Amino acid sequence: MDLRLILVGALFGAAALIVAYMALQQNGERLSEFFEDYRGKLDHQLRRTRNPFSNESFERFQQISTGGAGLLGLLLGDGVMGRLFLASLFAGLTWWSFGRYLDILWQRYVKNFTEQLPDMAGVIANAVKAGHSVPQALELVIEEFQDPMASEVSEVAQELRMGVAMDQAMRNWSARITDDDLDIFCSAVIIQRQTGGNLAEILENLAGTMRERKKIHAQIRTLTTQGRMSGMVMSLLPLGLYVALYLIVPERMGLMFTHPMGWALIALVAVLLTIGGLFIKRIVTIDV
Image (cartoon, rainbow, N blue to C red; front, side, top):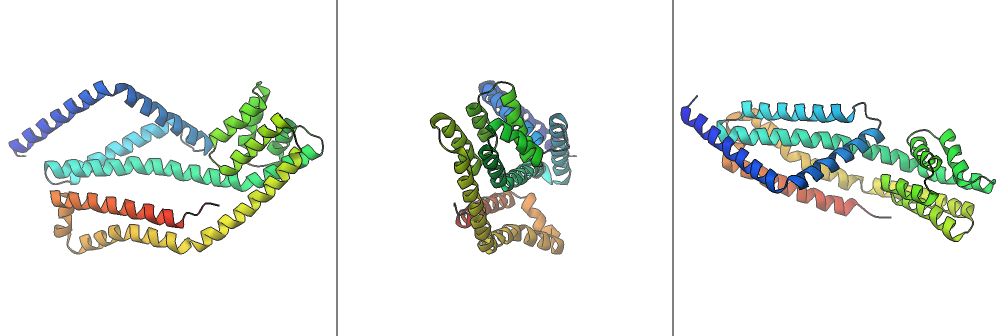
């Protein structure tokens, strides 16, 4: 290996370490808060989605995979800058893919929860109409429903057994899962306890409204299928085209990862795809 190449790489690494040390000195508290928030979100999603990984094992696997991807980029790159670019690209994509995996699991969990929400509101309304209290109605929901509703309501019931006020337990539940229907349900229970009223009738009307909203959401999703598929195809088209051209002329297309102009084009494509994806998502997302 060329001695000058080794010297340039060593100087670049030393400069990067110095910059990282200075940034850590100035923003150490912010970085600590960021990682604490990240670990809290990670632990919350892992517990809620019934993921087979523990918090520590998931973090370790994510770090090892990211480091391995970065090492692979260093081996495949050409030149110092090319190796560093590929290492950063592979490591960043690997780290992002782990976060995306958790996001998909969490979205699926929330979707299953919201599908059970109208039936849960109906069961509590019937139980209250039959003379049960709200905590007793929650215990009935735990017995009648499967996860994720049973586990969520079980946590609310556990808080009530420990002495947490009903209003605070409802607020905690609403904070754990971001969903408009759940916010309305919790607000209805809180307001009824503070001002009075027929809770059974309120929850029956709320359950009917939730079911109608679900129907409208399903119709909208059917009508916007073409737009969402078009956005997916347009996003994957550049990658598929690059792979096809790389198989035909690898010596030409390989310059995308070894030449500064190729790096600039990759960054430009990523920005344009992101902007296009946001525009398409804005068009096909309709609030009900």
